[in-house]
Length: 245
Image (cartoon, rainbow, N blue to C red; front, side, top):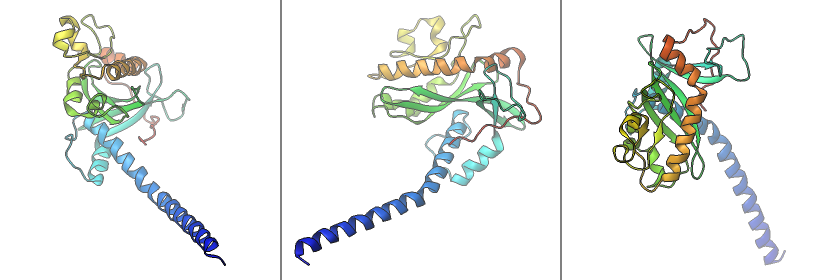
């Protein structure tokens, strides 16, 4: 066998072996990756309601235990009605309830919005008055670091706390992201409905504003129920939503 053939054979065997090892490693790590992703989603849900401190390390088991003890995920219809397990319609939407001492303290909506370079995923929490934002978190995005990527930082997310999704007349208006500091660019009567924007990230703010409006509009029947009638009536056998993944 010539040296050239030996070289080709060696290279081929090496490539096959490396491919097999990489495939085995990837397959073996999938379970760990799914588990890490699940814990990260649960942490962001808890972060949106202030149940965990942003930036502070937590053991995965602690996050899962806290989530299990304080978050209930139910399914609602696009009419704002809590669905029973018997119904199981195709239009079911997830709604996360934050519980303390068996009392609902806030409810959380999943955020799936267009961004400048990709989708923006996170959670928006609302107080049980159905109009005041309790918190906001982002767990995945593709925005430019230092510009649109600032949406993952606490200075930006803290701006949402206390903002309102209704105007002074009680009409739904959503939450907007201003092109600069709210106090400088938004007239005073609308300031409760806006958060400070990110310098150099106008398009990220525009797309996220549009995404939040769509999401809040979709869940407006739920918020309207909280505003007018208080806590949703949860059937004994409520349809449990799928855990975040």
